[in-house]
Length: 264
Ligand code: PHE
Ligand code: CO
Image 1 (cartoon, rainbow, N blue to C red):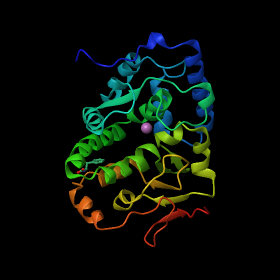
Image 2: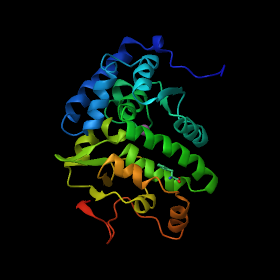
Image 3: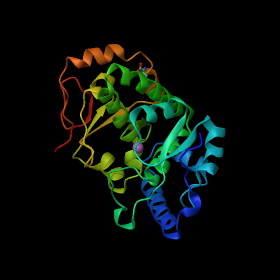
Image 4: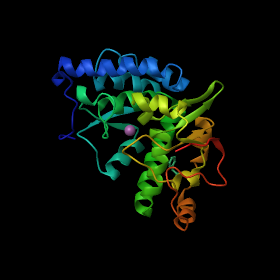
C-alpha cells in the first residue's frame, strides 16, 4: 500500500514525550492494585513503553512475537468497515497524536496514550487477542446485518470499560478506564455507579455515554468466559434484542446480578 499512513516517530517533540511519561508514571501508580494481572503483565512485557511515546515499529516486534498482533497507524477515527477489517487481521488501529498538557486528565477522542497504553497491553494476552480478532470479524458481519449499534455496546462495556473478577476483587481491563486517572479510581471505589455481572444480550441493549464517567460497569468472570460467551453466532441475539427496548446507562433490571447498586 503506497499511501499507508505512518507514525513519523521522529516528529515527536521532547514535550510530547514528556506528556507521555507523565501520563505513564501516573497511571502505573494508580493501576498497581487496580488493573488486572493480564494488563500489568502486558505493560511489563512491552517494556519499551516507559521511556516516551513508543515507536510503533519497536512495539510491533514485541507484540507480534507474543500474539501475532501489529499496530496500524491511523490519522484519527476510521470508518467502521476499515476498523473491523484491521481487527479481523490482528492489526490494532492507533492514533499518533498526543493530548496537550492542558488535557492530561480527560479528553473525549482517543490519542496515542489511550490507544497504545490503554489497548496494547491487553493484546499481549493470547485469549484477549483472539477476542479482539473475533470482534473484528463479528463487526464486519454486524455491518451487513444492520446491528452495529448492538455490537458497539459490547465493545464499549468490555474492551473500553470492562472489569474482571480476580481472587483479590474486581480489577480493570477496559482501555478507557486504564488510560483515565479519575475513572480508574472511580470505577472501583465510587459508590455512584452500578457494578453488574456481564450478560451479553443485556449489554447489547444498554446505551452508553461518551461525555462522562460511566454509570454502569459490567464485570466478567474471566477472559475465557467472555470469549466463550461471544463465540456463538450473534444473528439470533440481534433478532431477539431488536424487539426489546434499550436500557438506560444507569438502569438496574430485576434480572441483573448486582455487585454494587449505584446511588446516582
Ligand atoms: N460470535 C460473534 C458473531 O457472530 C462474533 C464476535 C466474537 C463478536 C467476539 C464479538 C466478540 O457476530
Ligand atoms: Co479505545
